[in-house]
Length: 195
Image 1 (cartoon, one colour):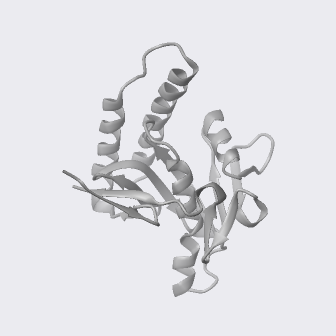
Image 2 (image 1 turned 180 degrees about the vertical axis):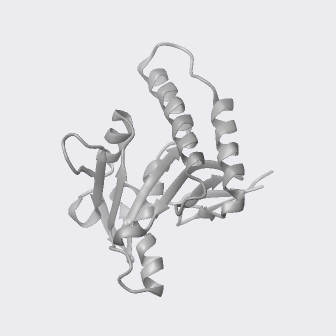
């Protein structure tokens, strides 16, 4: 039986390179086991599309293992519900890949919040290393673009897939106790469970 507790920071952790392939495989197995949603409703189509996209992004992430990207995992009851590869080159945080389990809600926003706050940790050791409150990424699909726009990202051009979030310029974000938080998530607690 899992031990549950409420925490104020999402249980996201760094995945060391020697564990990355196994965690990506575990995510893939869980998404496949989740299966397709029956029916012809709008929600079943959206969930099934999310599953297809999740498996695609997971393959992209696996192909990029061994690069300089750092892998982070949002884990619940020992299982990965979201994975994200980050790059810190160029003076800001760049989300290289982000994938969420189709059976989760808000995991993408939680992961972006985590990415947005990474400069604080690195700048504490090397001041000015990374621009704070800014995250960049490339969107793979219309669905992910819509999700990122809903989180306050803006498109860098009309035709490209590059997007940027400048938290200070978005009403969707605010600083609370020195950290960037989605306005909708301020004061939220996260269920943390270990087996």
